[in-house]
Image (cartoon, rainbow over all chains, first blue to last red; front, side):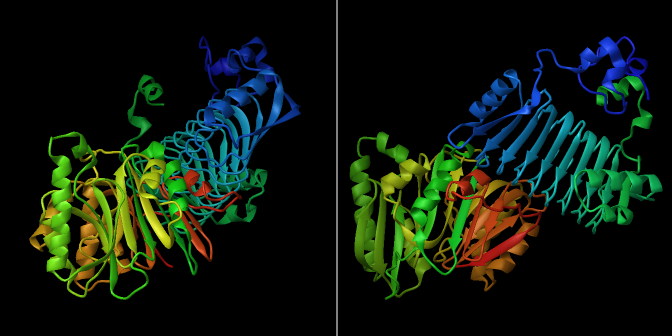
Amino acid sequence: MAKLSDNFAGERLGGRGQQVFFDAADLGDAGAALTYPGAFAVDFNRHAEVDAAAMDARAVNIRIRELMADGVGAITVANPGAKHSLGVGILNRLNLAFAGSLGYFGCGLNDGPNVTVSGRVGWSFAENMMAGTAVVEKNAGSTFGAALRGGDLVCKGDAGGRTGIDMKGGTIIIGGRTGAFSGFMMQRGRLVVLGDAGKNLGDSMYDGVIYVGGKVAGLGVDCVATDMTDADVEWLARKLAIYNMDTAAAANMQKFTSGKQLWNYDNLEPAEKKLVL
Amino acid sequence: MCGIAGLIHRGNKSDIGAELTAMLQALKHRGPDSTGFALYGDGGDGGGGRYVMRFKVAEQEDISKGFHIHEQMRRRRETVDARMAERGAAVVSAEQATEYAFRYVFTYDGEMKPLADYIEDIDGAEILSIGRSLELVKDLGDAGEIAGQYGLTGFTGTHAIGHTRMATESDVDIRSAHPYWAYPFNDIALVHNGQLTNYWNSRRALERRGHRFMSNCDSELIAVYLADALHRGGDLEEAMHRSVGELDGVFTYVVATGDKLGMAKDEMAAKPMVLYESDDFVALASEEVAIRSIFPREIETSDPYEGEVRVWQS
């Protein structure tokens, strides 16, 4: 296993590395850099419930922060009522459950929490998520996981258009169908769709991998079909098993990657790659 | 940005005035400039050749301008009355919602377009809707204010569509507010969220075929486009499918007729729409929070896909 210090010598890591796997325990003092300044020490055995019925988004988000500050590590938000921007900007370890549906921009900019949503989510759920997991039991709106940077994002139902647009890392799994322009300009990461994919799949993608189990309405510019490997099947089966999804689907997926005729990192200098990412 | 909403009860009636008011109030943040309702009830009293007409004789902002506006509005209304009588339209009842907005129930057995043209020829007069069941109300302000001003709570009917407008392409006035009536076709109204990029070319083509535009709002084009298709004998759903290919831009629109509710999304699905559908009720809106405003219980919702056209019967 690579050491963080081997890859980021002399550089303070403010977030989480996406391509380097490491155990924080191996890092010694450097491990402190993995936690945001002011992060709360929480106990996952301490649970609290927030009834959002009569609260606006700001009040709910402040209450979540107050509970984390108090050391609560498991929070259930009841009656979210499809309100927008709930559960955003959480840079902390936390088990966060929404009992109901969320509106737009739910759980964006998170780095660390494990989120579950028992209902549906609106547009741009988990946008820019950096680490952690987010699992949605029903459907999702468009731009699901836009600019995702890390972690696992799962929708067990159908997702709208532009799923994983501009994603820069992490994994998105859609249990059903996804709409047009999914994977548009994706730069890294894996997008897994067990159902059908809309037109212009992977349009202008720089890099990354898209797996589709159903029919593809059409490929976007510079998105090409690639042969599945045993490693792909094994990875898919393991990932799907984690979220209690159909592991048998792993053996019958199609794989798509960038043709690298339009945009690709191979034409960039190392310093330029860093700017892009 | 704008917010759009629609609902249809299949096989029964409900207080659609209160329901749509709640939905549009929940979408206020998407469009604070104006709010509009197209409600389908028993305005024409269920037959007997009766129509219901909503019209205005001034813009809201006109009231604060000019020394003679009140006298002008009075004269305009008298002229409307005279011209209707001249064409054989008999007013059964007349209500005044505001100083500039009126609701007439009338009987008429002639062709509607010449009558509508004759009324709109009056300077300052604009027909918002004519139909057997459609009543179109729109004004500046939020849904709660307008529903109170026009007495919409308690309006019983089968289906309705509405709009909260954030003005981007044209003025903040009643003329540019949604819904748009598909002039001069009875009972057809439309709301839209998006931008049409081939507006002027399409508008000129429709004007050459004799259609009138009351505003410079691109949304009006869709209403006129559908009116033109119906005028040429087309079917609503077929016309909606064709519109997805012929209208250029990003859009989601909701249209209603005397007994149908429909929605269409552009090929890129760039504008939002959330749908709740059951055997006896359908609701759709730009945001789920609007649908939640009339449902106390947990519900299943979904997003229609790119290029999708759906039509529901009441």
